[in-house]
Image (cartoon, rainbow, N blue to C red; front, side, top):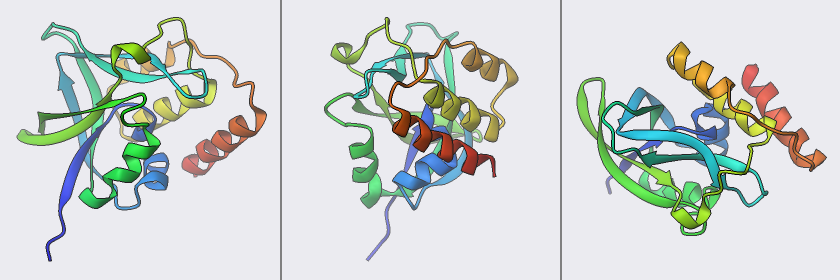
Length: 173
């Protein structure tokens, strides 16, 4: 019996190791990476009526999305697929990217056109999960500044907000 591992490119709230490990216990960071030819936007319609992160092809080699490659058990991908609403909010994309100078096959989630709404804003806690994850992995300062400039709003659900504030506090250690 062999154990199969796959690589996941995280660019949103799953950048934060605590967030991802709550979803996929076997996940472990392999390091920073860049998704070339893509842009990041907070415009994916979330089930909670707020904006979530999405990447989309820009058609320009000048654009890139910073993120982190995580390795996980292939058998646990179904857990992440459920958390990310695969087929009902995100599609799965496989692509080769460079990781430490080596081509590496990764998967990531991308929202189809029917799940994009540029009028939505992320909740404060969601934006902070992304920013804190990027800071944790020491992504470039210019990328952090870009993330911090994203407008966000208060979550009207106090329980959900409190739950995510506890995750953020626990991740700060």
